[in-house]
Amino acid sequence: MPCLYYHVNWDNGRKGLVLLHQYTIGGVFLYYDEQTKTITTNRLLLRLFQKEDAAEVAKLCNNYNIYKHTLNLPYPYQIDDAVSWIKNHHDNFCEDKLYEFAITDKTNGRLYGSIALSNNQRILHGEIAYFIGEVFWGKGFATEAAKAILQFAFTEKHYHKVFARCFLSNAASSKVLQKIGMEKEGVLKEHVKKEDRFEDLVYYGVINKQ
Image 1 (tube, rainbow, N blue to C red):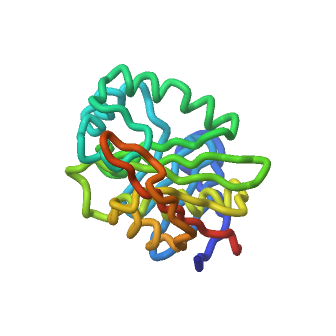
Image 2: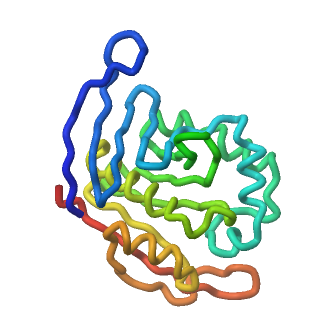
């Protein structure tokens, strides 16, 4: 995936200078702030979840149309589920186990969804997973966030490969993964039991060629 990247120092009002890593990729401007662990794109701010986000997370996730397309999301989804999910995010991030970001509007802070990147340090690869609240579907937020996470994986964390999985029935997710440069690598037939049906699981992947 073509990109242009360079490192710059910015004075952001805090003491001294904070190093922001700035990139342009696939028409999306982004920069990563190591100190605040945030990624800023054209429209979005990807940040760590806070416990105060639990109620809004529960509101977005307690939706059957999201549940039916996800592997592990419980349904109904309660605030306690969100609290339990959020509580280890900071430690996982700092220990380079799992990077989980809230997808928010960079202007008004509204929460749109979540995007995560696992980290297999031994093999230098990881998996992207995400959800967007149904009321925000069709606005390109998943694609914009996924492009940013892919660049974060390759440039900041030096992954060799990033992959993703989605149900064959989830055409919207397949389109997002194709838009960020992933290629379809295979289909596991009737691999996941979801309620009373079996779903085909599609694997997508992309190699770091930077």
